[in-house]
Amino acid sequence: MLELDKVDTNYGVVAMLRDVSFKVEAGEVVCVLGPNGAGKTTTFRAISGLLPLAGGRIRIMGQELAATRTEALSALGIGFVPEGRRLFADISVRDNIRLGFEAQRAEGRFADRLEAMLELFPRVRERISQRAGTLSGGEQAMVALARALIGAPKLVIMDEPSLGLSPKLIDEYFDTVAEINRRGTTVLLIEQNAETALSIAHRGIMLVKGRVVASGKASELLENDAVRHLYL
Ligand code: ATP
Image (cartoon, rainbow, N blue to C red; front, side, top):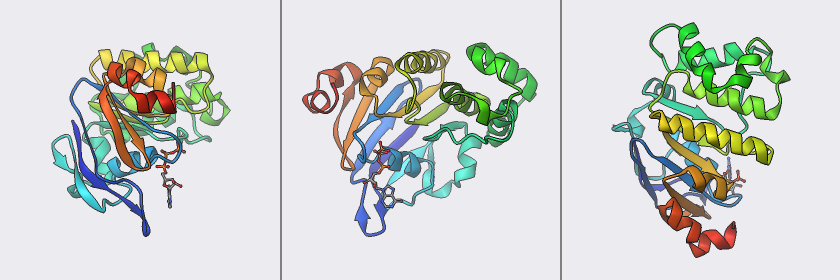
């Protein structure tokens, strides 16, 4: 589904990612962990085509990222949950989700697809006609996830979705992510919240200062010294 091969990125003259390689196979939940400033959002931006690569390559759904424009990625069957949700506050929850449907050029009728999906998001259903800006942080997080899923993407890429949520909401959120994976969606989860992310992930990668310092099965990473030292 996704392969990063020796990826380098720079911010001006400053190196950020260096030699970052990992794969996400169909059906997996893979998490990218790392402390503040490790390069997690930079990884998200590189995969989204928002940041040019200084070296290496990214293949996504079998295509070379360099040949794929950012706006075409959604239509390839990829859902994005950006850091901070990035909802449009002044339009309704329904219209926010509709934008995901349009971006993913999904088939079928929006109303039918929405109805089927809201089964997973009861709280979003209650708020469907409200302006998105009036929702709580937890509800907004669910709307951003619903927007990413509305076109039934094959792969969803999330950047720190649990940021700012209470522990109870974090558990609820990750339960939903695990459920969408069980229903067939592959997930790349970029997260600071290592223990919870690893509890639903099959595999993980840990970044520190733009480099991969550990990778492996989720159960192995929970035992890894570098991960335990930084997080657990
Ligand atoms: P956090 O959890 O704090 O969001 P992160 O792992 O997502 O951390 P990044 O946002 O990828 O980290 O940032 C990695 C490094 O790159 C940081 O040192 C950051 O200050 C720097 N950086 C991020 N964006 C830019 C930019 N536009 N120009 C210059 N430096 C940047």
